Amino acid sequence: MRVDAAINPKQIPPGANTRSPQRWDPSYAAVAVTLIGGIVYVFFRVAYASFYAALHTTPEEVGLGYSQTIVRGVIPSITIALSVFVVTALLVFILVSTIGYIFLVLNLLRMRRSGKRSLEDFRTQVNHDSHTVPSLDQYRDHWRKVLTQWKQRYPRTAEIFLGAYNMSDEEIATRFAAQDAGEAQQPVERDSLRLYDVLTAELRSTFARVLLHKATVVTLLILTLSSLTFLIRYQAHRVAGGHSLGPTLSVMTGIRAEQTTVSAVETGKTLPTELTARPVIYLGASDGTAVILIPEGGGSTVRVPLNDIVLRFKD
Image (cartoon, rainbow, N blue to C red; front, side, top):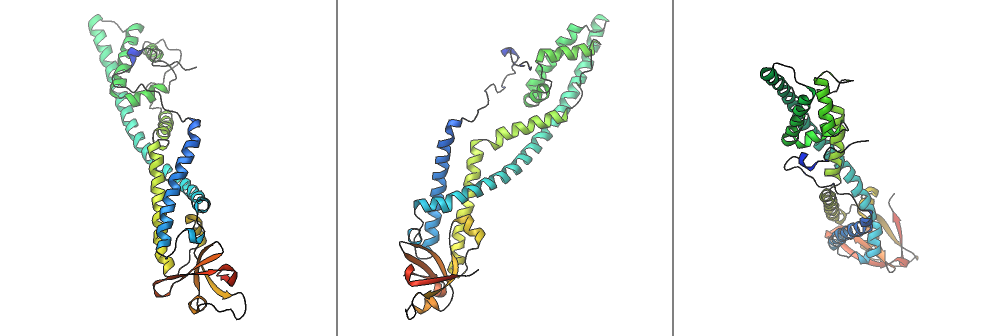
C-alpha cells in the first residue's frame, strides 16, 4: 500500500500545485452530447444553406429538414470527427510526450548529479568537523534536505521520480540513508534513471492533461467541423459544373448530388429538352417534387414531380 508523500503540509514545496485533478462527471454526459449535437447541427445547417444557395435551391426543397440534417449530416460527421480526433490526439500525444520526456530525462540527470555532489560534500564536511563517518541519522537528515531541494527546483520531475518508489518522503530518505550508512538490507536504485517508470508516468499525465482537456476536445471538434463545412462549400462549385459527389463524399457530407438521366414515365409525355438531352444532377426531393440541376449555362435548377419522371443513376 502506498503511503502518501504529502501527509505533512510543511513538506509541500512553495508554488506546488496542491489541487486535486479534475475528474469527468458521468452526469454531464447527456448535456455534453446535446451541446455537441447542437453545435454540429448549426455548422451543417449553415453549410447546407450555403451549398444549396449556390445551386439555386434550399435544403428544405431537397428534403433536408431538421431530422434529415441530424441523420444525414450530424451522425456521419460525429463519426468522422471522432476519427479525426483520435488521429490528431495520437499525434499530439506523441509530440507532447516526447518533449515532456526529454525535459524529464534532462532534469533527472541534473537531479542525479546534484545528489551525488551534495552527498560527497556532506561526507567531506562531516569528516572535517568530527573526523568520523556520518551516522544513519545524519544521512537521513541530509537526504531530507536533498528531497526538499529536488521538489523545489524540479517539482514535476521529482514528483514522478520519487513517486515511482511508492513510498513517503521519510521512507525514501530512510532507505537512502541506510544504504549510504551500509545498513541497507537490499540496494536502492537511487542512481538509476528509472526511465520506464518516468516514461509511463509522463504518458499517463500527458493523456490526462492534454487529450482529455475540455479545450482540446472543443478545439479539435471545431477544426473538424470547419474542415467539413469548407469541403461542402467547395463541392458546390464542382456540382454546378456537372460533377457528382462520390459515395465517400456523400457519406462525409450528408449531401446527395448524383449524376442521372431523366425520362418520362408515360410514353409521349413531354419534358423540357434540357432535362432529357444529357445527364443532369439529382439533388433530392421533398413533398413529391424532385430538384434537378442542369449544369449547362452556369447551372440552373428545375423542379419536376417525381411521379412524372424516371431516374437512371450512373453506376
